[in-house]
Amino acid sequence: MSKNSDQFRQLIESLPDAFAYHRAIYDQNGKPADYTFLEVNNAFEEMTGLERKNVVDRKVSEVLPGIRESDFDWIDIYGRLALEGGTIRFENYSDPLQRYYEVTAYSNEKYHFVAIFRDITSNKQREMELRNYQKRFSQAQLFANMGTWEYIPAEGKLYWSDECAELFGIKPGEFQGSFEAFLDFVHPEDRDYVIQTNQPAVELKEGMVLNYEHRIVKKDGAVRWVREEAGPVSDEVDKIIKMVGMVIDITVQKDAEAELRAIQANLENLVIERTCELEEKNRALEQSEISAIKSKKRVADILRHAENVSFVTTDVCLPEPRILDFSYGAEQIFGYKKEEVLGKSVSILHTPEDVEQFPAIIEVMKNNQSGFSGESTLVRKNGEQFPALFKTHPLFDEQGNISGTFGVSIDISDRKLAEEGLAHTLEIYRKGLEGIIASMGTLMSKRDNYTAGHQLRVAKLAVAIAEELGLEENKIEGLKLAAEVHDIGKIGIPAEILTKPDELTDLEYMIIQTHPRTGYEILQNIDFPWPLADIIAQHHEKIDGSGYPEGLAGDQILLEAKIICLADVVEAMASHRPYRASRGIAVALEEIERQRGILFDVEVVDACLKLFREKGFTLEH
Image (cartoon, rainbow, N blue to C red; front, top):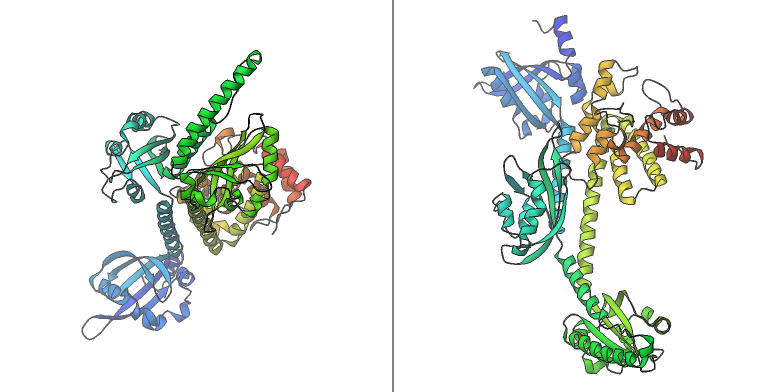
């Protein structure tokens, strides 16, 4: 077929991919030296930004002067193909055009070849974003002492992430990959409990979720506390195929809890109780005093010699009580020797703000005859301030008057640092997730400006509805991110359909209906702390089961998906579309009110109507 024939022209112009027909040029030694463009189609012009008149009958070295400096030798690859014939397929980056292309090239006429290619730059950018996310997530796992795992019963295999292996004290790849190998790391006293707790997971029982704590023994012998959380993953026919979970080192938290329990138990022994009847008042008083002396002496002896626990007694002289006793643990924590502080004001251990409260605190203890506990900021000898947990009780004389106080405190600086570090790591993780969502939104905007703006307006309305319903802040954050990319699946739909100025055909509408499932597939393997993939998959479901893609109904649909569904309809009706003018917000509100309890959740509809009709909410365009 002649390249100049009308049939040939119609054929190449009907192709959705870029088409270019070339003649290879060789040097005097028969080596590929250049090639000339003989014909290109409209898609070629659109994808490359090169006009036909500036390309046809010109050498590639003239059209793209930098092609010889490219790492990929396009001229040699195509030149050899034109000599040898056949077909080749590859993906590569074009330096001169700064784009990624998927290329199919073939030659059935010597010295000539055809290249058909499509622009895959957006896909490559998304892949790089996901790889960067996975790298950041891996770093976040290390910082947070967290790892992930998968158990596939059909294979009898347990797969650990590299971070999980490091948490257990072994090198990545060293784990043997079975439940039995995992049990070897479980503390012997916890092993039966772990086996029993995991039995539903091994049997893949429906609706089973794991959330439990146990001890492990690392390879170096160190004992650590961990928390395990896991749930099942199903295939397209809802058959459970594996368990996925995460393990978090909670040793610092457990140590702090143990210290607090020990202190609480000791302090409770200091409470003086009168246990006798009123008619035995004298004997009861005597007995309680003896009991108090013994109790105080026993606990005082314990606390005076305890490490890392401060025990301090004072009088109640105002304005500043004096120190009467100062334990070994107090010396360690505050940096003073006992002889340095006895008889001195207890204010040296407190911030000026706390010292101002002493009179009021002593008055409260006098009136209530009880102590109090909490967190405070204390001061070391060197002036350093540090966070502490404390509990203070009054001491009474023989007449029942308050004569002094005793206080117990522990330094929680390490715990606070750990909490701050974890919070910082989680914030980095959260921002990374938000960055991924923002990048996806940017990709959509480059392809379809309408969809990008629509998503942001839907997100604004969805968040307002959620706040009106009183959803918790964390849930609203996940809802916002899901709404901002709820149409991400449209990236797989031809732009001609998305921007078509006429009503869609049945076939085109069927193609549009694939976008929730495509969106789910894009996000399903990213470990967000919210069910974003499921929300996006369900955002066109209706409560009467008439929606798509699964025909879910009622409580089968996530609340977040119900909210986005309604916000989507309101924004779409109130906005201009390629095939119709805006119908206006009043018409949109009348429509959702008419479908209240039929297509849309009653509470969600009521919240939306209240926003617009009573609170002056508006959609910005």
